[in-house]
Image 1: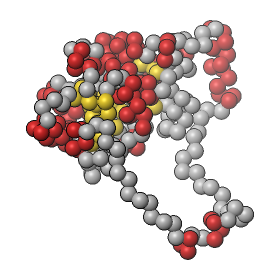
Image 2: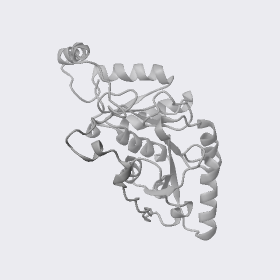
Image 3: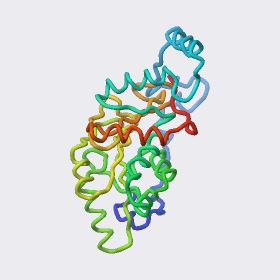
Image 4: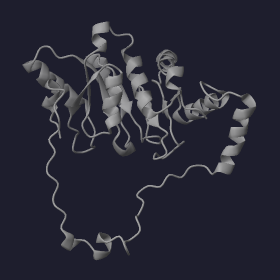
Length: 267
């Protein structure tokens, strides 16, 4: 793991401990040979709609002759997801693209110099989290997760920033990317307070948290990849902030960031 001090050296590589050697004496002989080996046990097997259930939608696509870039089925999907999330939803081609668009949206009103800098995120995450920050023009900086919830906590991030600034004046934190590990719920309240107190925007990587997402003032991104609880093969959705005064503006910004060049997920 990379310690909290790594925000002073964002390019640091995590130290990996050597992997223990596998002791063959502890493994059943049937697992060591191809012939007679036990069949693989799937940990998670995608369960998507059968082709017969999809045919009516494919026929609607053919009838409308809109195959990309915000067709009628895409709009219908956004409405259904918005009802589920109790807020506005913008569909994107993947959750990674959704994170990029969300980061760009929360930084849009900030001065130009504040749109560049560090994006604090947990080292316990998928590579797409760091990739999205780089595409959004930010530099990933990794922090250790808390032992209780395997996620970043606002107090921990405050302490890391305070310690870094105490030893190095020139440090610019542009955003914080909070990850919901394994879809565990992230309480938006403390993070909303963090943004209000520090002025640092927050985006929630809730890729696996379709049913664990809570409304807050920070955009969250949910994955619709085939490996997730609600899968569509590929795609993602970004529910913008819930407060009515902010949601329309945020939805427009995220939607504009996910223009035709990113080909949003189609129904």
